[in-house]
Image 1 (cartoon, rainbow, N blue to C red):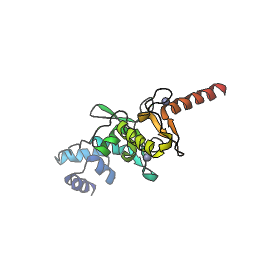
Image 2 (image 1 turned 30 degrees about the horizontal axis):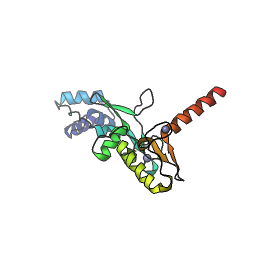
Image 3 (image 1 turned 90 degrees about the horizontal axis):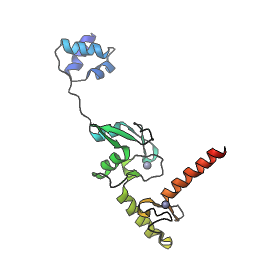
Image 4 (image 1 turned 90 degrees about the vertical axis):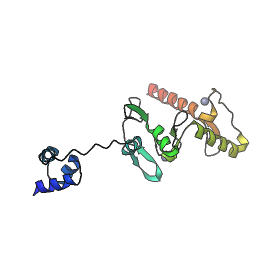
Length: 185
Ligand SMILES: [Zn+2]
Ligand SMILES: [Zn+2]
């Protein structure tokens, strides 16, 4: 008997939705049974910021994590929690470090848009990595600022060959090249 089955699951503390998924009944029918049996609603579990973040991510090969959640009009990975908006990277950073990032939190790996907490850095982390690479690269001792005055502690990067370059200038350069191609086609 389905009604007995519903009653059994209701008494186990399952939600209407969970029961409707297990038995060939609708949520409305489960809700009706709950009222008939005078079994109170399951208190809605308030999900934490981390849980919300987790529900919007998907692990992919190589330890990277993809964002499957909302995006802003400009394409940023953002979501809302308790009427505040958070970027996927800020929360990824918080999960890993237990504190909010200083400055902008960004992917530190080469996987485009990766939000893995292990692959997310803030300004402090980037500066530290840059200083280490700068020390390892040694011979090329890169400048503190690029020709356009961008702080290299924040925007500096190295190629696989150890040459320093400004990531911010490179992004601007790529964008201009793309615009040129669009205009000429
Ligand atoms: Zn990654
Ligand atoms: Zn620059």
